[in-house]
Length: 173
Image (cartoon, rainbow, N blue to C red; front, top):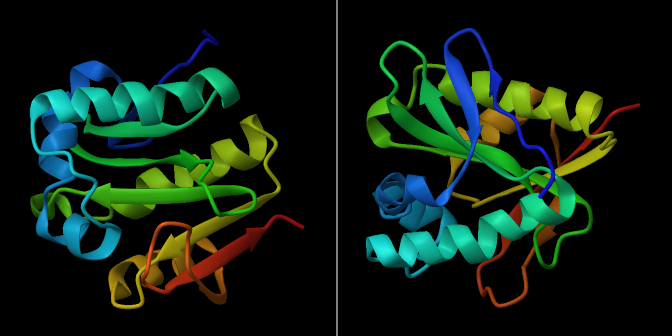
């Protein structure tokens, strides 16, 4: 396996997600906003979360050297969200994504962690064009993407999905 290291910002650690994060992943993937805006991934038990991490997250780290980070608050070690770079089926290029537990929203953690992941994509991993997808109803996500410098591109539908979503793009020129 490639060497995967953690990164930090002023208030946060970004730690590559691991099977040990299963309880947190289970909680995050079953929050009302995750279910509404991202969708039900049928992760209903700790075992489901362990399987999701092992089969969906870790193979991308093996293949590309980057993926999903668990966002941990420095002040108390609380796992507050996730942010990362994803090679998604049906999307050309790499996608940036983020999600936070409800009690940690609206405190700038999304922007802080996403800014760091964007910097890593451009400077460490050499990715020059990034995508982001979001639900038409997820105004908070749209606002954050625009603050990061992403521009709305078009509406798309991913394979195996019925809902049309918004595709944003970021080009480092």
